[in-house]
Length: 577
Image (cartoon, rainbow, N blue to C red; front, side, top):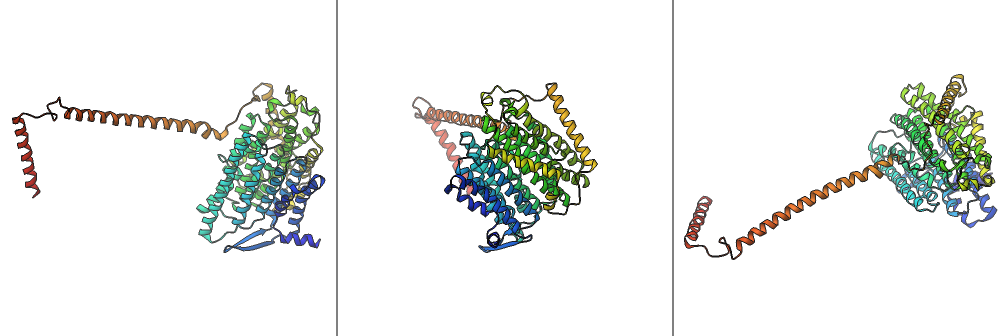
């Protein structure tokens, strides 16, 4: 015990996973699997051995860096990140790709290190580590499309890091401080830092990297991606911008707009990526409100979301591995062959939809209550609409079209022999258990939150309101399906805001280019035409057959022109003196 405590104090959180990942390729068989499962458990033990308010400072290049800071906000995110790493390792245990294992575990370690960083420089280092390691999970699909998507993902993630560094330097120049505390939107530097966090949080118009990259990853890689990057950004917002009110309308927009795209999207993993964006919006609103209840709600909802979103991505990952696709138009009828996966998917759908007795209910309602208490009426009603929408696209659409909608004629579906591998089922079972356990007994989660919780989700108002909302959402889905108004599942690419530069921008650029070319061509034509005419005049003037300059003039004409030139010369000379 003493040696473990000594290790906990000597190594910053997250580095157990980062350094431990390096050993993975040198192990094999059961030893490799045991080692990968052990790493997140060791990391979890470490952060709980460190006392609250513990910190480690380091002098580097003339700067004082707080490389470790332990408080309740960092600990709850560190706890759920280790839990997510364990479940993700378990789900991916049969993957025979050391590159995925190494980069995924190091990616988790980078996110964990970031939430325990007490200064902006240390945060930047871990921030970039998560960007560089996570892109390999997109490239791991080893297709031309995943390579291009991964390049875009990497550029955007590195851009976020560059903005974070630039904002940090400007903030240091303004204040002389590198401390990562509540920064507020008070200067150019803090504005750039907020933009960096906003990119990773998938703010509106900065979000399409998420829907583009996550579905292109491997069946197991998407589970890793869903847990860390965006929730690290939520932590960073909660740490640095609690109470920044501009985040309230931003978060409300994040909850609402994905609903429309998710309803018409055919790829169910992309539907889940849209619903991930939707759920991030709830957390951003909570951070923007900034009260103790709202911050508790954002942290609690991040915890619950990592678990149930991971469960939903696991279920679609199991389908992807079995069938080779998650396109709704090519699925259906899988519940007979994969009943456990279907059940776990339904549990995840009920958790994300915030059914009473499931985890989403006891966390999301904290944010809704905080919005109502602080009289953010518009945001409150947008959140209600988004709550109904998420039931439609994640709570109903994903399990319905994947497992129940119809008997698919896809040969790959018909060829499915049975359930997902045992390790995948076990990971889904643990996540499903947590979705229910948190919903039924929320007190252990509440005890982890940054502030004391004097609040209960299970009062008559919360329960009845949520049940009414869910009932009307279910009836709307059934009605739209019965009358044929629900959008058909068709093969298509939803461009979202990418339409601006994939469709509109080329038209504008090409149009401007064509206009500029016409102007250039007209100008060149006019210049060349004028030049040709001038040269023709000169040629005519000097050619032998003309009376102008090409042959001698009569003596009278010559004498007259000589007199004129002499007169002009005398006048110029007179006035010049």
